[in-house]
Length: 350
Image (cartoon, rainbow, N blue to C red; front, side):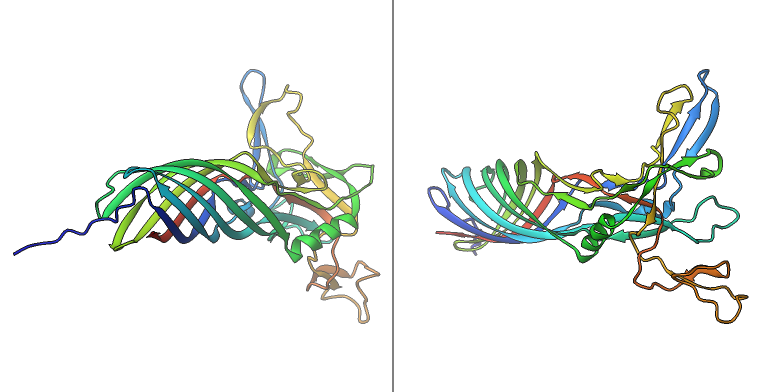
């Protein structure tokens, strides 16, 4: 009775071609600042007070950043020996960039008696990211003649990046450019703040700008090959890539519209302890359609709301395709490209 042992294809001094599919997941995100609070202490260390960011803190469950991408790779490699090899690869992947956080407290919004503010959350998809990574990699195979053959690798590369803005972000950008108003400082500390105090200076807003630089990178990782027949092997490959560039989305020339309350501690004597923090009060225009004006239940017959708003109107109606004025925050920022890729594919030995 005899038994045969499956062995890997001899690859020394041979070329191989790999085709794979998989995904890439970025490790960096910009967390929402809507649930932030700053705690104040007296110079002697005694607790003084707190100030809370006025936005709806339910937005804290979402973040701005690149979502998981799907794609594929084509790789050519050459084995200098049974153990050592070098490869060159080109890939393509794409995915969404999401959750540009817009929060608004519209003019006419009813604020519950137990609250100081009543902000509504709008999470907007920024658009679609497309990446073409080019990589040069060297690796070591640990069991070159075995069916199961683990390996490790490291190398460097360059990724070409492009971005296609979504219809929603284009609309937000145009709305910013057609709106004006002033900074509204957050006043008070207890109970999350007492209100906003508008600046006397009115300014025009500018739209969305996106920075999508091509970026060099270095990477390291490893994987496992499994020989299925002569010349053919399946494999799984995982790599972590570190990039020098960042993806950035700016609103009105900054990472955010409005100034968030930081999540930290300060002494009352610190120069920056009390801000300024606050929203942007849009008095002409608006960024999103939050509803419409409709007559109150006890309004006289024939009451007209809209262009002419009377005391018998309330802001509770359905969306009417008109952007609404109010107090606004928009939150985005910069994120690193760094992330983990995982590829599944097959290799053919020539």
